[in-house]
Image 1 (cartoon, rainbow, N blue to C red):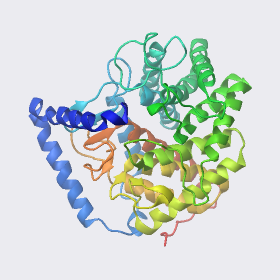
Image 2 (cartoon, rainbow, N blue to C red):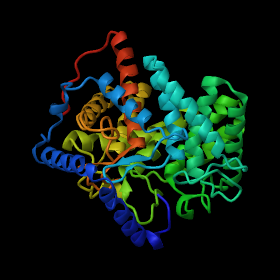
Image 3 (spheres, one colour):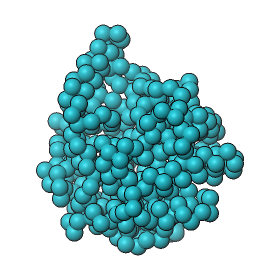
Amino acid sequence: MNGSNDNAVPGKLFKAMTEATGLLRRPQRALPLIQRLVSDKLHSTFEQRHLCSYTTTKRPSGDALNSLLRWIIDAQRPDGGIAAYYSLLTGYSQSYPEVTGYIVPTLYDFARATGDDRAVSVAESATRWLLSLQIPTGAFPGGLHRGPATHESQPSVFNTGQILQGVVRAHVETNRPEILQAAVAAGDWLIKVQQPDGSWSGPAAYQNAAHTYYSMVARALAELSDDSGDRQYGFAAERNLDWVLSHFRPSGWIDGIDLQGHPNYLHFIAYVLQGVLECGILRQRNDAIEAVAKSSWVLLRKFETNKFLPGAFESDFKNGQHFTCLTGNAQMSCVWLRLFEVTGDLRYLNTALKMNEMLKQLIPTRGGRGIVGGVSGSHPIWGRYQPLRYISWGNKFFADALLLEERLTLAFAASGAFEALRCAS
């Protein structure tokens, strides 16, 4: 997302008109569009509203995972970047540096779990492309790829942090000094522009404001601290962590997402939780883990009760909107699985497995390239979050959830404690 709130309405109208004309240029996209609209309408009308419908595996997780990664591999553009999305109206977008960055760890995790060397090749190509985009200050630019980075390129705190995740992981996998040099330059810039209270705001922040979902930037700095052995990055991560934790309410709600002109999408709520949880684990901060557990429990109970998580909320998780943000669902599965790993509480595993089963049933198994294996922005696909698109970050987070599911259930089974998990009440 980019642009200011003042230009939000004209910008949205222009965007809608541009996408709609995509069908005029490629009328063959009309049939897949109609098929998906009809499919989602039928699914929304006749789906069963109870969690027991997800206690039986209807599609093997391994098959779904392979399909998700094939979609990501197909979405790699000739420059090495991964497209932001495949639109049912306009096809593939340009490469998206931010998401390409944090897809790199997923590619390496997939290769490690499956032995598929194609994922390593895609990760290496993506890393080379990302390094070519780094601004001389050490930052990375925001938005879709527009051309080579220069001194005039607009730096982005959030994109730099998200890309840093991938660059750090690439260094861990390859031990190439030029990759570590790029990671350190990015980390140094993030520390330089960090505010005294631990937040990030100003021209390099979205809408010039501080946001609690920048906890994902703190996570990346904590990872860089571990990889480089330089404690200053860990201290910077904890300064942001303290600032974010000050925005957690007793209800579990998190203030400070602050996206003017946009609702509080589940995707961004989950971003806060993922960043705080992973940073808390890396920095051994039990207060962070406990705060995430409280908020995550509220969302767990909502999913158990309704077999549905609204795609956006108002404060204190009230007035949920009637569509599903599939990316946010996948992220919450990751959070629940990591909480199970940390706490041993089977209720997190139980709910995450049901969430994964629900998501598997929404991944297309038929259609053309860009559709099969894709994760749509919303369900139904015309929902408010990224409508009529299959989005690369949705694939990334659902692949992460399935990789976590496989690792944790195998370890659980090996412990001799595995038994069928009962349907949640």
